[in-house]
Every structure is written in C-alpha cells, then in structure tokens.
Length: 569
Image 1 (tube, rainbow, N blue to C red):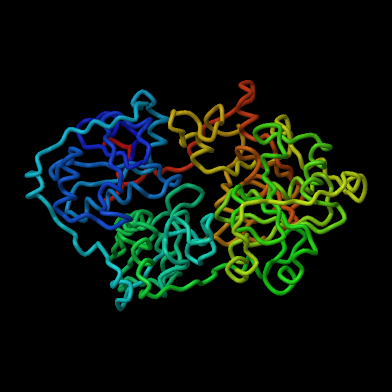
Image 2 (image 1 turned 90 degrees about the vertical axis):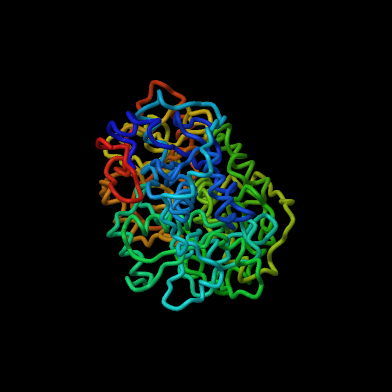
C-alpha cells in the first residue's frame, strides 16, 4: 500500500494500522505497535497458532478488516515483512505492507505524526479469529526443510554473517548465533540487496537476481536470516512478484546453528581480501600480510578494539576531530598519529569491518593521505577474512598499547594533499559533482530519530542542494567491493565526467572518506572529502538544503502485498 495521494491519509481509522518498528515514537496516528519478538517463544520461533491469534486480537486486528503494516523500509531490518508474513500464515486475507515505510508519509503529512511512544490498542474478541481465514501453513519452514529436494535456500543476512567473517566483540558469530557461517548449500541474497540505492527492486530485477543464484520457477524458495525477519520480508517480495512457492524459516540461524548436528559452511564470497592490488588497498591473502606483521604499522579503525589483529593499535576517527567530523589542525593530527606509533617513513595498513561497517578505515586512510603519508593503505576485505584464516593472530583484549614515535619524524618525508579536504563553500563550486554517501533515508529526509528530527544529530532534514545520492552500501555488491568499471559506471550514471571533481560527504565525513579512497583506487581524477559533512553543514541555516524523494516505492506500487499511499485507495 502506498502512503501518497489521498486514500491512506483520508482513511486513517478505517483500516488497522500496525507499527512494526522497535521504537514507537513518532508513529502515525491511529497506529498501534506490533513488535515481532512478542509473537515468538524465543529467538524467531513462532508461538502456536492460538497464541498468535490472541496476540493479534489484543492489538485490535480482525480478519475481517484491512491491515496495513509499516516499518522503516530500506533503513530497517524488514520488521514489517515479519508481521505481514505472520498475518498471511494465519490466513488474513487483507494484510498489506506500507510501501516506502513511515518516512515518506511523515514527510508529506507531519500533522499525522505523534511523538508519544505509548501504544494504546483496543482489543477485539478472539472469536473473530474463528472464521474468515485462509491459512497458509506451508509458508512456515522448519530446519529439516533446508535439505529438501528442489529447494533454493536463500540467506538474507549480510555477507559477513553468511561467510562467517562478521564477529561480535567476543570473537563469536554476530547477533547471538551459535556458529559461524551459513546453512550448507544456501546462497547469499542480503536484505540490503533487495533495494537499489534505497529503492525496492522491480520484480524484473528481483527475478533476475534470483535466476542468477540458480532459481527456476519449479524450485521452492526457502529464506532465512538470524531470526526470520529479513527473510520474511523476502517472502513478501516473492509474493508481490508472484514467483511461486516460498517459505520463511522463522527460527532461522538462532535455532539452526544451535543444533550442532545440522550442517553449516563458511564460504567466502568476495575476493576483496585476496585479489586487490592497488595504491590504496592491501590484501591479507597470500604471505605478505601474515608474514610481515610487526614490520609495518597496523591500525584498527573500529570503535571496539576487542578481537583485534596482534600488533595493531586502535585509531578512532573521532579522536582526530574537534567535534563532529571537523578535523583538528595539521600539527594536532600529526601529534595524534605520532602518539599511535605512526611514522611517515613506515608502511601503515588500516583495517575496519568493510561492508559491515561505516567506512572508518577510509577516514583514517584519508587523513594520512591528507597529511602526506606516502605508504598508507586500507586492508581490503576488513578484519573478518583475516581473522577467519589466521585465528592465532587474533587477540581478544580491548586494550590498545601504542608505542609513540617522536613528533619530529613528521617534519619531513611527506607529500601533503591539502586539496582533498573540502569545506562547506566548495559544494557550490563550478564543475563539481557532489556525492551524498548516506542512506537514501538520510538523503531524502525520511529517516528520523525517535524525536522526529533528522537522524544522527544532523540539524536539518535532507541533503545539500544539487547533491546526488550514492549510498555507502552501494559501494558493495552483495558485500563485495565494486570493481572499478562498475564504480565508474555508477558515477557516470549520476552525471560524472572525468573533468568533474568529486566532492563527497556523509554525516561526519566517514563514509565519504571511504568513497574518496575508492576514487583514488580507481584513478578517477580529482576528489575531496568534506570532513565536517552534514553535522557542520546543516547546522548553518544559511546553507541551502533540499528534500528529494528518490523512490516511487510509496506511490507506484499496486499488488497483493504492498499498499501505496498514492492514488485514491
């Protein structure tokens, strides 16, 4: 269902509206909160049918009345898909998802947004759930189904979760999963790949992606994630595109991996960590990195230093700023790097969490190049693949013990690149393409914090006037770094030519610094990173901003699954 046009706005109160987000603040009036976890017995495992019906009845949901569920779309985890899938499992005939999520509607109808986080449902009698249903029991998968014949098993988690390279601070699988890796035989189709630059894939593109993974119309699709949330959204997309049989494994990896008798694998999908050779990226594959630990300076750019590579010291980007993303002066930057043991005469490799992070390693690399360090690199693939191949080199401690070098070492041997630091006034310069590397929700002003303002402390909603959107997660395809040809093609499609300088920004110059490093890797000409980015820019009310909604998800969808706020419905 779409939130555009007149139907949705004009008929609030005539249908049941469920808010599937974890935080109910700034909800649409008439909505009640429906948190997926309250429908489970633990993890993602569903309660029995009677308990599910009773829970929905307590929220005022009746089988005889249309239900629309909303969440945060591409900026969330697919919670709205899980609620929708449970309603269809029970047989609700008029259950839909609000296409585009809450953001576009909140932007077009702020008068319908309620700041309170109190949900006040009016229950219906459970007897209403005794008739008028069309149960779909076969859309609930169980662990044994993954080994069934003629089934394509889809892992909708991130690539780092799929291949076992995304770890929690304790060095185990992320999000409480008992074992690293994926269901043996499963293919990877991450939730963020359901969207292209924040916009829902068309059915033709969705079908093409599945076909490339080995799907045919005769094969049943079985999806899973951590707790059956992202995978439920996948199921809803399959229904929307009428692609045949599909089921969601509700218990997913929280249940599956806990059973040690069930087979799992760790298949590294990307060659980011073994095949990159450039002036920007260093590979952890082969013998050089492992054999030379201690012969180069190794910086860990992650916020949490636990489970770091031995010989590494922690380098948090925020400690190089005066606030937000604004850089300290050059002398202070050099002093900070010297305190971490970084010398201009010695190779430096910086690592982070790659596609699963925020580009922190790019920010540290960019600052080193700004100061003129000639031998600064990023560890391609991040810490995960190396930790998987060399667990003996991983240290659980979160204590960083740098050995400082004398600041005098920073007085020579440098090749400063002062022009790679952009400032606010540069965004209006001629022959510049301004790149917003934040999520589409941040770019178009539809991603809000619990107080109803712009996310992440930004003072105003929207983007720099004239900027184009190239989100950080679009730097990767299914978790793998874009090839230079694909990266160049993406930029060309946005209006870039070799003659145009690229100026990137995000919230605090982190994701945008990673973008700068990619430009250098691909030798695409002049580029600069705006360190202060939106934390600085939006705080100056005299600087122009716009709110351009990129996707028509909220106005052009007509299906048995999604409801649009467009049109007259």
